[in-house]
Length: 260
Image: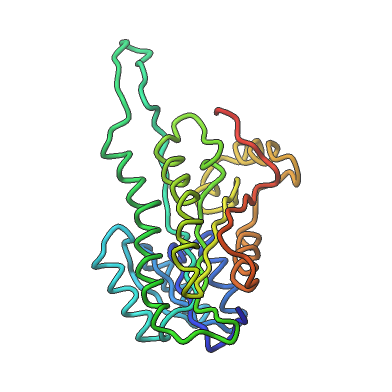
């Protein structure tokens, strides 16, 4: 896909981290960008910076997502690009015994479901609604109507202790990528997924320096945290390269996560 001012994009989770970096990278190519996020202050700031539009959106709600797409499309027209970066995580063992009193508890199912609803169902909700909108567009010269990029995690393949819900949700994103590519192949819409490793995002920036240093040292090469701009670079490659379709790509410095 050739990027320019005639192209509109929606970035979920675009107020910070990987999503904000991708929003900036697309805007630098002239693309009209709409940011979906719950962080209104940060989202508005990024939107002002890049000349885009901010939409306060909760990806677990049909009504919220519909309203977000309506606002984005009113401002920029139907999007040809969707990048799904909205997501969250938790760390709870499947079952555990207290060291203090020997009591036993299990992973609360509402906490498990919450992660799946945001990371997996929320991602699919945005894909389905965006793809339906893309079907209203005329194909471009190469027959393409749109391109979608999802965010999974290396935890989809080597999740750590306490990551059952997170790994399941991200594994689901990986698992649905090829079937969706096949669903949309007759309509000229491509979809790919990035599996980031340990990235320098706001979540990690709050960690103590010794923790960040240890995480960086665990990466085979380069021995540092990933940069959001590197995620954005791969996302743009997936969007611009017309033969890139149905793939799940690790972006992780060759790391393979240990149990803890």
